[in-house]
Image (cartoon, rainbow, N blue to C red; front, side, top):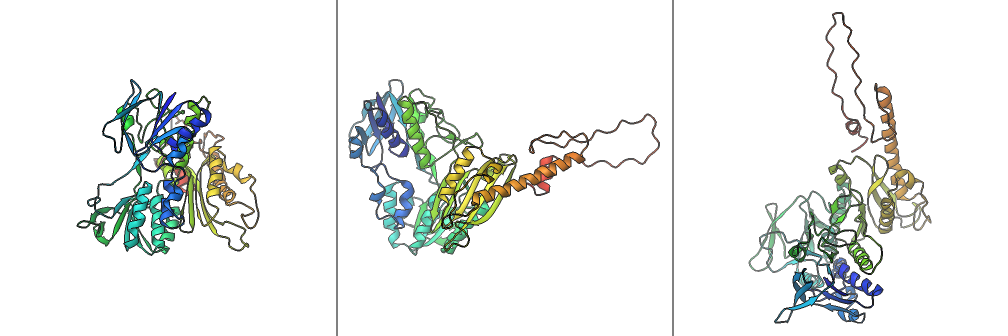
Length: 509
């Protein structure tokens, strides 16, 4: 079997290695437009910040190492055309004068994403950079040696990580985010405000609800204009996210969804024998059941493994995602999993939330650090989201919450769960259990109020589930044929829904 893979990122190379693990005979060819392969883009800010000595350290394998496993990786080469009818791809190498062709039995499109380049006047000036590849990181590190003011466009993970690391070098950093808060995809505002405050303590200027209108200069960056105000800048870094690279998939008729290429549970596209994985595909949310992007390295690796196992005869499927994420800015860690309260409200999901301030260790143990945790649960107690911020113990608790949410556990179950404890590393009541307990108390208050309202209302159908009960208006009594002259009754106020009553009484958000 001839297997051709377009793209040498996390999903493409993971698929190649795992196919070879289970299949020693098939021919595997991987094409990539890049010079370097098998590196971690997530590590780029930490090389720039000096935590990792060199960009060479984040390149985990060279093309020659794959050749030892009989996987041919062809770098600096572009696949220009796919003929799905005769199962053939056309490609052109960097120094080649003519195109070449190769046949496939199975094709994997792992083209990843391309950086979003907002149409800002001046984005082509010297001193404007994107953040995607090792080469991008090397250029940013070199150019930043001689600058005083840097503007980052975009307040997502990469923007915050880079902003923190550049500020540590003594550079004046401004982060401009168009949304009303930082990192809006994964965090609610009261949580993002906490890491915004942390960055501002490091003398990073944060501008939310703000647009970079232009990048100014004759040949290189001299300033930026943000919300009509000109600000000094020697360097601009565009960290505005990525867009799925779907051109090749589109050219052969692969069905596209709202965000990227549509695939089934085996990562196969709508075109027979053509598969896709990584940032170029959309997935299903385990919370909402809706399609969603998941541009995460962990998602890409899982997809590569599952795709490889499927192609080698294993019965396995890719499951819906929770998009768990974790990051570090300065000495602080932040993490999230599931959906935010804002997203739940946008989808008309009634929720209760708890916001607690706890500690990473026993309160009396030296060095215990604050830990902020937000939990989001439906009115039946099912936990659907969690966000955390603190100096330590965030990543492992995000992973714990990923397991809890994936198993659809309820607050009542989490409260009674067993957690490990030792004063130097944890609390006797884990912050996760504390937050679940607070949500549970709010749910019980709602249920008590519902029962009370049901008892007071006439002809009310009382049900067992708090979010299913509706207060029905009482029927009017039959009028007697002969009535005494009476003052006309005042009109009754219109009946409001039970959900609205809960909102008015601040039981739910």
